[in-house]
Image (tube, rainbow, N blue to C red; front, top):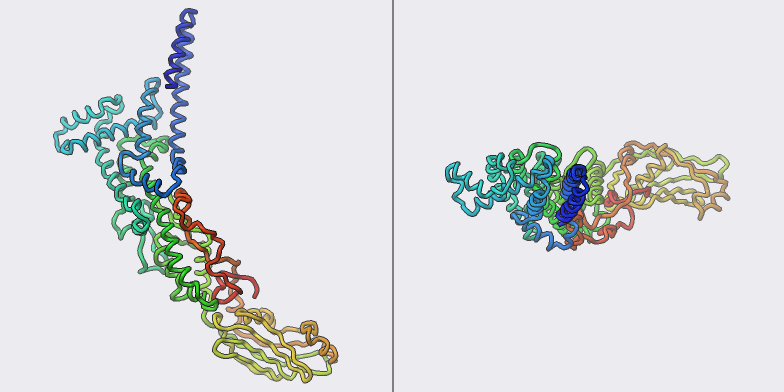
Length: 528
């Protein structure tokens, strides 16, 4: 309508110019205007095609996404309708000058759709002789321009690939039916349509994913059919990319829908298989429950999450499917990264040989220690090394999950003083303090006994040990504190608040350690 009004106005002005003998000059300016108009016209349509997927933001309910998904394997999907609309709109300007290279794609695609429809109405058409076929096709596409008629054979040949493309889109229909169906479908096919899905280290024999057991997936087949159609209908120029993405649009939409539906399903499995399982686990057993031989996080990574996870030298990350990344939460990826490192690093038991050496005090002291006792509290029994100022040794066996406080007791005839390294990481803290084999204490280190010690002239007490085998304990790395995430993936992108699941506060801990424990070490850090 706007173009018609412009044309009518220019016609009126042209008549006026004719009366003023300026018709020739006005005609030249009119022709230049229409060339400019056509260029802007195609440019705006190209921008619209490039940004067409922004319309997905209008789908604000899960039902809306599923309904749109159900239309993607039909001719009545938004992408094909746009291409046909572009063909109609381009008819109004293509006589001005030759269209840009990409501008002929909508018309060729529309011609192919017409032939496809004609073939669907008359299924036996494909069995007739070539001349009769072309007569039918010519009737179907007779309204198209010469550049279509000159490519009639390619248009006809592309229909078979288009028909197969629609079949592969139809194979996605389970993802529009239910979340469970989407999860099963995506677990089988995720990651196809590109490089082969790599086998994850340490996960051989676990639930497989990606590739459908070596059979071509719907995405693989659909992409091959798209490529064949493109060879027949396009000219191989980079400027065609934006419009050609519309032909691929239904496939990308269905992959996106399947991915985010699956992300929501994975959150539900995380809640059932991990969060619920460790809810009542004691803190000392939490590490083993999460990352041990039978750890629920390990089982989750090797099971339901495996098809969607990838790993390189830097750690775990989400795979991608036709350019759509699986939306894992960063907190989940950090959790399994830290768990993997800790699993390699933390051993069930450590043996450290400690040899007691004579204890020294300043020469002016009126009393000297006669006994220094080093005690490691463990679940089965305490381990204690008594030092009567002659050399003695003990192999301390520290089990991170079952050992606790370390106590150093110094006995003088008149008084006893005690130094404690509390908590399950107390043994490591003790070894850090005695890294050089000695530690010097003053009366101020024992405030409740300070006056007594000063009265005895004790200014310093030097406790001495020879320690062997401490490096593995001292080398245990600490991590910044973080919490077990409530969800593993976001199902809110595109599918928006729509799905209404897994959208809780991710900062709320499912397991909140009250203090650092060996079991919860991957989730906490800092000096004990």
